[in-house]
Image 1 (tube, rainbow, N blue to C red):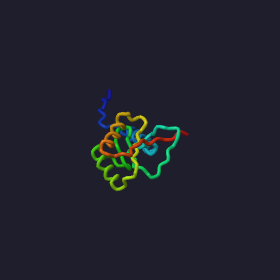
Image 2 (cartoon, rainbow, N blue to C red):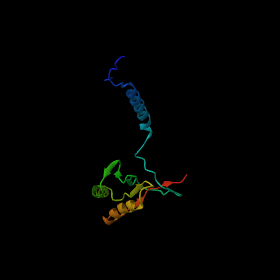
Image 3 (cartoon, rainbow, N blue to C red):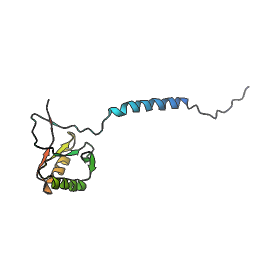
Image 4 (cartoon, rainbow, N blue to C red):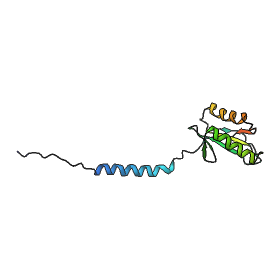
Length: 128
């Protein structure tokens, strides 16, 4: 009888194949996903604006942004007040994802109203 020898090597070729397939899948699907999109609720009639408003975006994960930059509530207030000092006639609109809790939108509006930001509204998408 022949004595069996212990195999002390691992064949890694199948693992490399699986890894390369997963890498290709992720490389193809990554540009298709856009995590920064905010889905606005729809309304029946569009409103006309005289100037470009300051847009505060509240995303689904509760992050607050102005022009792509994230802010905490304290920094948001100081940044908005500095923007309003430079252009006091600009309106302020909140663009919240339609799945964001109502309480979060109202708390941001309340924070702004309590600190004398008078022109605060909501940004909506017109119905087609």
